[in-house]
Length: 273
Ligand SMILES: [Ca+2]
Picture 1: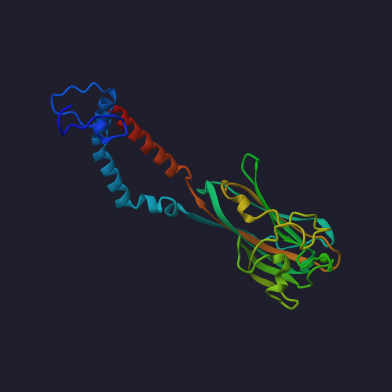
Picture 2: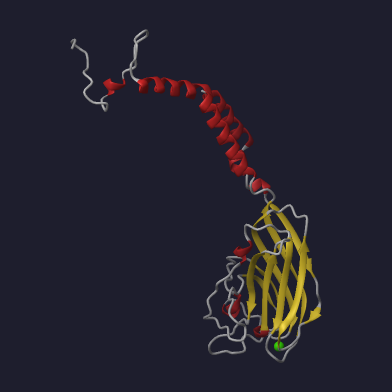
């Protein structure tokens, strides 16, 4: 061993990865592969640089999803008396077709009921896709104010409210803890009741098992039905109107497909390099 020469005693030492000098034959297959990898990387670097510049110039990463958000509003005005003391109730259906929203990301629902006794009302929204598959259900009202010590619930007369997931006012089932309309119409932005329990036995202690989030990920097209019943005798109200604000993306697979295509292209370039 010559003076100044480093002996390669372990592959963990840098000397073992010494780059061969020009004209020197390198018996190491690993070294050959290493050169090939470097050559391949060098070949795709211009492509990666152009891709990175494209992403920066278009803001593709930052806005791919948000720029595609679509908002659509739908409403119906049944203006029908709600059968008193009956679980049969009324159903109002909005048929959505041709919507560009292929994936719902959020939904708000407004509901206008005039008169009656708020503690009597039971309402839920259900969505079915055009092929008949269920695509979400949420209990909006389920005997507001009904508790273990109050079998009748709140005696206010009517709702003109909007339901939103996570609304700061909280659970509409106990709305008088936040806002007391003093016998009038409750207004404002509220969280759905969310209790799927039987409206004849539900209380505030019943678990809140469903939410507006259950519609997320499904297409807007299909049948949206709002069921409303007055399940306790005395006091008759009117189902005035209801509506939905649906937010979603028109082509949920666009960014993912684009990313997959780019990844495939990069891998193809690597194989060729
Ligand atoms: Ca009633």
